[in-house]
Length: 166
Ligand SMILES: Cc1cc2nc3c(=O)[nH]c(=O)nc-3n(C[C@H](O)[C@H](O)[C@H](O)COP(=O)(O)OP(=O)(O)OC[C@H]3O[C@@H](n4cnc5c(N)ncnc54)[C@H](O)[C@@H]3O)c2cc1C
Image (cartoon, rainbow, N blue to C red; front, top):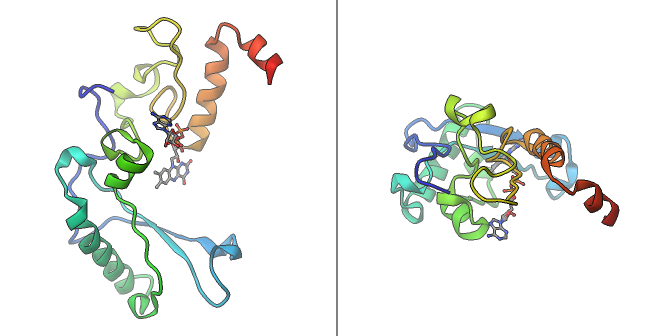
């Protein structure tokens, strides 16, 4: 991937006032926590590794800031009852999942990186190279990735023979 592309997200970590999405997992799947316990998943947008953020240093203060923000708003007493806490950072996305610069969401959907401007499913530069998934047409998220697979089917030259083999 070239340095010309813009990756999600370029903002600096907002330690003072983190932006979060909270998911109460056992509301839909009780198996996500031992009996008598709860599990919460918190997603907070942070910059990818080009920002120079040292996550070995920043991860714990950022996690603590989020825990405090949640305690003061929707989860009073959170830290007192916390038994296990697990954090994944852009460094993990790069090291363990090979995400470019640790950008968990790939290409940012700016106007000039959206719709037709997103990398096409058939490469214009390399013959017989086909692309599918979040950073290609039409975009990220599970629905977008599934639509990307459907779009790929329409441009693959030998899709009928592939279908016969599976
Ligand atoms: C924290 C988070 C929360 C999300 N929440 C939602 C949500 O609620 N709803 C929603 O619709 N979407 C959500 N998404 C987005 C969604 O998960 C992604 O858009 C989607 O998973 C992308 O699918 P993909 O197949 O393109 O890539 P991925 O699912 O990233 O799969 C790519 C795979 O390729 C592997 N890989 C990379 N490089 C190599 C290599 N060189 N060789 C071999 N394997 C390699 C990676 O390890 C990875 O397993 C979320 C994403 C994140 C990060």
